[in-house]
Amino acid sequence: MYRKDLQRLLSTSYFPNFFALYGICNFQIELFADFIKRKFNAEEKLVLYFDEYNFQKAVNYLDHSSLFSEKKLLELKVNKKIPKKELEKFISLCKQDKDKFFLLEFYDESSKQSELETVFENNFARFFKAANAKEGVELLSLKANELNIKATQNALYLLYENFDENLYLCASELNKFKGLSINEESIKQYCFSLAVLGFDSFFDKILKAEDIRNDLDKILENFNEISLLSSLSANFYRLFKIVLYAKINGKVDLKDLLGYLPPSTVASKLQNQAFAISLKQYKSIFFLLLNSEYELKTNSKLSKKEFLISMFLDLSRILKA
Image (cartoon, rainbow, N blue to C red):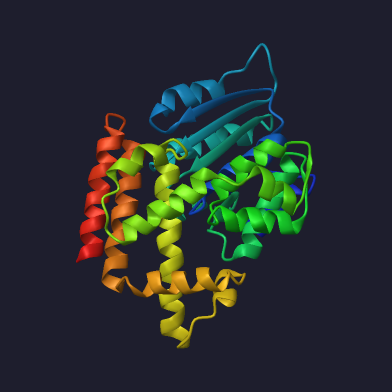
């Protein structure tokens, strides 16, 4: 099912006691995992993160009864495929006992997971990146409700635009206002962020293939390595969409493409940046960013700063080609 289907299911009294989440928007996976866990209302849980996954540990936890709780949740956050038989075992245990819950969060943005969908018997949701600003604001509205924030639509639109459509950064800013009411003035006063301004300047330097090694430390004060790659991907993807839109329609309509109309200076800058990169370069850039994200998530022995410097050197070579 898709996000809207999952939202409808969550609004009903029934929810299956085993479920999987995956797709190309990690923010949505995390957001809806929280909603589902509240629906499960388990008294005890075991969470295994990525390389911590161990089948025997997980199955022993779910299979054995507890002296302290009736409802038990097994939550797995993984980015590597779990063997079908192991998933089937977890699901079988849940089918035998309605007070056992299994939640799989699969953080791999590469492709559709047909086998996973089959194993979970339609108890899954697949997520996609927000198609436009309207959908992005809808997701931020869900996050605001979760934090008990009364936010105007204009406030959420401004937040989404100011933070380069990065839902992770937007959600982080919303945490400041937990339990409060906010409007546009709140965003202007409290969410003016050196991180965003710094990233814009940083991204401009990247496009100009300038040396950014001295800027990297400052950027990493505000971004972890994965969020930095996500921001880079989002910005290159936005430029790529402009090029594709022009090729398909013979013109550029940023309001139709982005869901809102940026100021004329921003619009002109975006178009100039977009068309300065060839399709061949875009392909190489996305390949580099995806491989880099995979390496950061799977190689625990990686020297992250040196790895990022190497990646940016490769990116600079691509842009100069």
